[in-house]
Image 1 (cartoon, rainbow, N blue to C red):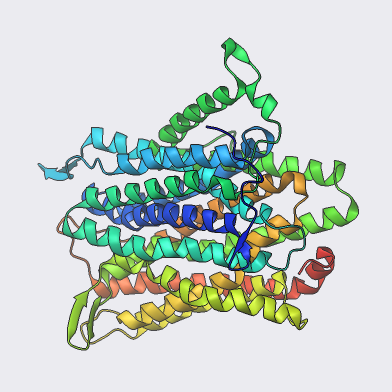
Image 2: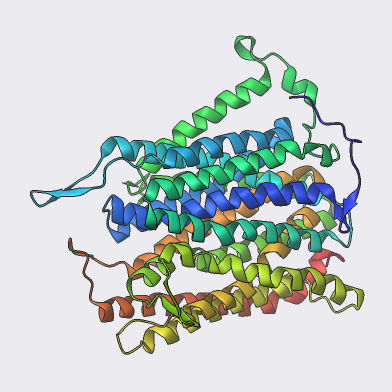
Length: 530
């Protein structure tokens, strides 16, 4: 593919670079596919292949951990060799293949002579599809987010608003994904829901391909000549990167098959193979960051990078709470909640998969407000700053679980929890997300040393990776032993969910209060960055 002309189009649209809207559309469709598949994943694994709750939580923890750890490598490869444009294209192709492979569902598990018999071949395809998605997200996710920051000059006051608009794109995709994929899966079968996710990713890839001329040349490889250099066996460095990527898919495939395999190494605590791999990535990344802070950073840069690491920890804690929306919240709404609604004589029963779209709905309501509010406050010197927003985001996230605790302790006459309490909990959670997540993404591009923005964006997503694993571990507090006939005792289930939600509320509010105490110190370390 020819390299786009950097001068082809340098205009703006609605006050922002046109490249922002290319990223918007790419991420909108990618998130449609990603969240549409994710809305189905846990229920598909438990209901169709008949695995236990605990193994289901292990699966989504392993998948989530790997899918958000992969951007560490995707960011490094883009920064050093491939560039963001080619990395995003590579990720998009892998994601299309992975999502379409998810549509191959095989035969449902069945009971034969008292034991569960599963379609082994279909499960292998399933794990391989997840591996393709994991590596594809690794190349696409961190680099699209980084590219948004690159479209703005340093200290451009439109940057935070631009990230809020970009974040809205994520949630336009998320809004329709759960509703569409959930309805298709429930009405026609799982393969239709997963197939729709694949179609969405194909649209995302086309959006990026057709919009490359608006990227202003800021997504190209740092040293194109190095990519063309012949390396081993007469192949260029670029083709060796693609070959290594296929090797990464195979590694991820093997890890996903072992999502519940526990290992003990050198007398250390027993952990899953996936968690060992994540610890190895984290240890290497932290060692490199420590070296970079000491050897390559000036005092001001060092302090700004340290503040960024604290914000990444906030991200980890927040998404430990948030990612339960695709774990414990899905099973909670599927099993113990009244999902019937009556509006002006129109009756509808929502599926648990469809309700995952509530988060995106509220983000779309809140995003325009935030896109207007932060610049308005900044012009008046009232912008509370990133550390304060992060602290408030954690506290508000904790309060969303207080709402769910109330719902479990005040069920309806039929013993099930009320639909509208669940909706309200989602709204409160998304207020917290709008305070913390898009602001944090902007902080990565503002507080990082310019040469390592991609790596630090990878560190941001690695924090999210750990949050997936921790969210799954928390979710196990509510795991049920569901009998073969599928019947559960609602009162017992509510008690388990209540205990989980209480713990989650304590984590969110407690972490937010600690962050509040650190705000003055962190503001000084940011050296004027708002």
